[in-house]
Structure formats: structure tokens, C-alpha cells
Length: 116
Image 1 (cartoon, one colour):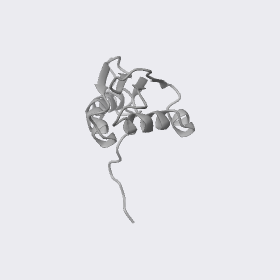
Image 2 (image 1 turned 180 degrees about the vertical axis):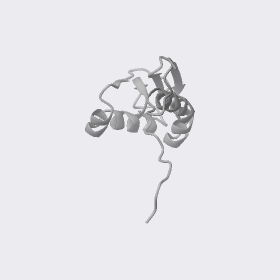
Image 3 (image 1 turned 60 degrees about the vertical axis):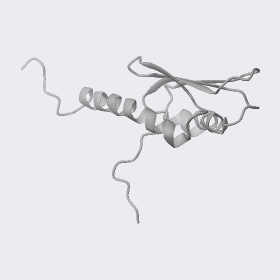
Image 4 (image 1 turned 120 degrees about the vertical axis):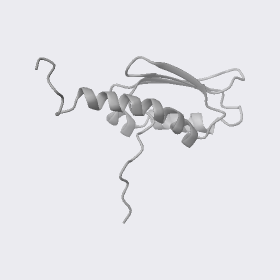
């Protein structure tokens, strides 16, 4: 039996908004298409009800882009064509980790009261 002590966060964790745009006839857009399928699935909608997920099919030949806005208001944009899904997850992991630490500090039961 295999245990995962530190499971990876879902790509959609700690996101407020995500927008994926791609041209279906262009090469190397499989990652963008799979991300759209993931973010619009029923399981993702149940797991992340606060997430505003949008997507668009471009009628012109342009690179696939992903715009994300994190819960703290930071916005990032990157081209999806240059990365595999695992590489995109590695890019977002650092940002998600920082937000996860911030969330844990704010919601910790061991938090010291400020008035003491």
C-alpha cells in the first residue's frame, strides 16, 4: 500500500478566478483543452464552489493563454503551449504554497490572541 504524506494541491486550489483561451486548430493545445475539462467538471465545481472558471475558443491563430487570479488578489498570465500539465502545476505550486501558509496562519487554532 502506498501513502502520500504530502499530496499535491489541485491546480484550482486557492484560485478566485481562472480563464483559459485557446485556438483548437493550433498545435500543442491539449493541455488547455484538458484544463477546461477539469475546471468545468462537476467534481471541480463541487470542490471549488467559489471559483469563477471561464474559457473561450479563439477564432484566430493565437497561443493558448491561462489567466489566474489568486485569493489574495494577485493575477498571473502564462502561455499554456510551452508547458505540460505537470510543468504548469509546478509553476503554480509556489504561489499556492504561499497562500496555503497564509491561510493556515489565519485559521490556526493555536493562534495567539493579539490583546494579550
